[in-house]
Image (cartoon, rainbow, N blue to C red):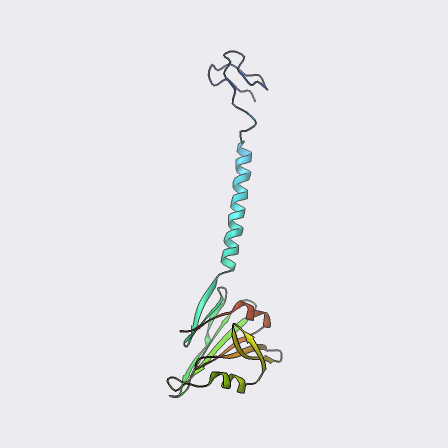
Length: 179
């Protein structure tokens, strides 16, 4: 492709540094990006933006509240309306909620005695299981044959039970605490 001098309009030789007619310095041809290069750079940035957005969205969580206790669970879990249960017999209040995604299930239950107070650690211990520590709380791990597992622990006068369909789902849950 032929180029011409920007000052006098004379046709330039292929590797000319200066115009042979007027002596004007020729702009460097090697530093110019072609439309092809600009298009490739735009495509690379678009792919990078999509990758970053997908990474950020996949790591998002939602805060859920069961009775007086808040938890964080992955944002891809959807609340199961049929798994919401609240019982109150005047002395003991029990609440349970469930969430699922395409692969797993989470159910969280909280039991408390409003005003009267209970020894939540004793109640958790009475349920049995293996003593363990999760989420910064001492509690008990229970395994149900082919049906998942649970961690039961106490926060103040609340007994919390986090049931998951697979042990690895425990890693997806964070206990914020009693509010």
